[in-house]
Length: 121
Image (cartoon, rainbow, N blue to C red):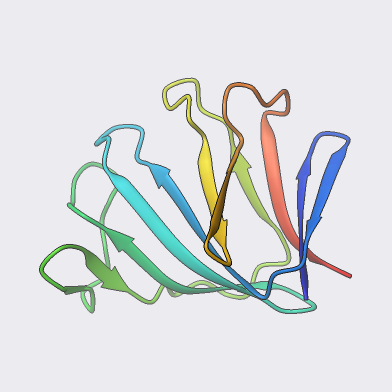
């Protein structure tokens, strides 16, 4: 399976079946992490994690604290595309991690305001 990272007219194809998306919450300035699976038709959220709660960081009642992070399974339908909007408040953008490697996407060096993640062949 492959994941396409689309930023404006530029598309990067990555041969991955799963990935982790990491970013800093713009208000609370704490990390947020999500694990995703790539299928031929959609992206499926497997787990979300945060280190603390705060404004805009509410979690479901079934979230579990493991001593370091709150963890839960997001109740999202399979998504054909995940759009990430660049924020001037958080200049570093998102970290896209897979196979023991991380890449920064959507930071201030990026010219596109939206970076889309979607399954591709």
